[in-house]
Image (cartoon, rainbow, N blue to C red; front, top):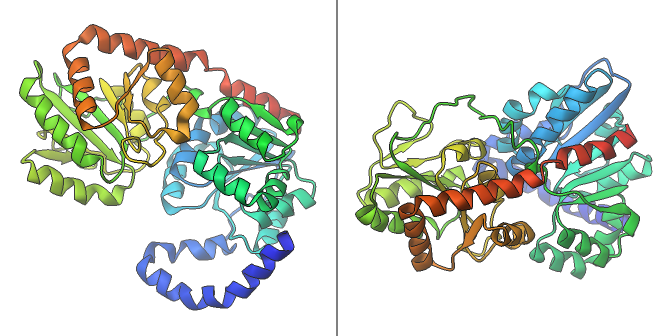
Length: 421
């Protein structure tokens, strides 16, 4: 299968070369990244320690998941282990420079999945252990490491229903790919069962929980600013990682809530893609709502704050009184509710939490989250929480209790990593 993959890659190479200038014309930010992903200016430590650990995280979400694990590995092993951290996207690299760079020996871009390039990275890094966070499965990368007998671990693995359909349809391709790992450490039992259905051996599969459970008592703001950036005396309603089709609903609900709320309300919206901030500006202007952007903290007069930065949302949840999790009122699979729950914040999400189905179900079961179906139920639920302080605080306590119960997740991962280093 890997032979066929490389034949196809070789056949497509001329078309990729021809289309690359056009791609760069519309994505100029990639101009500096692509050479780095081919190994140019690969900046690695000249001196190595007893062992070398290579950790890879695709982008912002995976880097956020890896943050506390990498920090703890560094604290435990920085004297004996060289830590190389790679990421793929520009936004991910930007966040990794702030969150990960202080706890690793080198921060690099991952190689493009062309066999000579992959082999070059492997030869230069010479890892004793490779860790992949959540996703970004590239055949040449994985097969080359496996053929050199480098142990590989998938951490924080999750399999959405949509991905599972693809994996089962292309089982002859994906099952051998997943089988290259020594261990597949999945977030939930449901994720682990999906790997079993693909034919992965039982001894390779473990359920260790979500890495975002770790570090609940030491979450750090990316901006290192513990001062509340939102208006004092307001009840702060967060809408995090929102997608197109949700912002209109949230803004309309907010407009209606302000008419009956006993205390001032302030809305915080963090679009999943920062590029959509200008769309939010237009929506807010249409509703005649004043707003500020988080990147401009000198202005504090708005009724709404737009989070227009990358990587700050998780830490800002600490200031939320109520949080809505985006990607759930539209069919986008939802986003991780733990980021809000770990601060004792009551969580609300829509019916489309497919990517976090087990976690969202357990949060509802323990009383730490509420599910809404549409704009009307979102409005009614928010209204009830805004007017009932005791209920709001009770749901927040249950959410915090749920995350605290799983706080051992980092230690569980570290024990397995120690086995290979």
